[in-house]
Amino acid sequence: MRPPFLLGYGTNGFGDHPLPAALDVLDDVGYDAVALTLGFPHLDPFAPLAGDDVAALRRHLKRMRGGAGAAVVVETGTRYLLDPLHKHRPTLVDRDATLRMRFLERAVEVAADLDARCVSFFSGILPDDADAADGWARLRDRIPPLVEHAGERGVRLSLEPEPGMLVETVDDALRLHSDVGAPPELGITVDVGHCLVVEPEGVEGALRAAAPHLFNVQLDDMPPTHHEHRPFGEGSIDLPLVLATLADIGYTGVAAVELPRHSHDAPRLALDSRTALMRAWAAVTGARADTTSDGARS
Image (cartoon, rainbow, N blue to C red; front, side, top):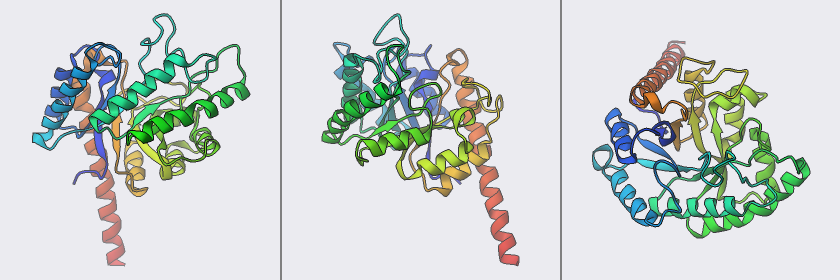
């Protein structure tokens, strides 16, 4: 029995593979979806021939899964695409966010061409010349035009809380969602590993709080002490609990493995990760079957 959500894998974990080769590996392993990180080394949205690259990618995605096609979400966590010296800069909370805004607009345009489920993005870390009030004001000013740009193209945006960033928790994301008028095109991305580090109610609490607006899920293991993406089994994540919670809240979107620092071992980890996910799902469905049987007997 397959999960009701789509299991995927992030291309940022295949940084040593050309994109077509990475997609072929993921297809061979049996993933339903791809989390596509724009930028080096796979698809630069600002490249002169980016339109041709997107068209080729669309065709490739449609060929996957025996012709049934693979779902895709667009991720925007590329580290040095906009500034070769400063990771992730500029962000939406910097004084000048012109490049970030244009990048996110291009991400929306690529997502529209790919029929992507959403574009996932983050707030950013506050710069030294700003306080939290400045950062929140900048987000309130900048997100609405991005939402409008997305809505005009039939694309959804999904804000990801990140440890250390201004929007760090699901509660932060919900607050911002409300502050900008709760547009239906704006939702939330939850990385389950982050929940171990920053969410007061843990993974289950974060997923349930985000559920009405949950557009995207990232899967990884992590220690509870710091932000470090690890393969399943190398941290403290309760994977069956994660999958059971996703099923219980009715999530049917993409849940993609996020291992951005493990490209050196990508094929093995893609296979091992899917095996771990399917074993965890089997544990969930087995537990549910046992519960149902017990209830019937009583």
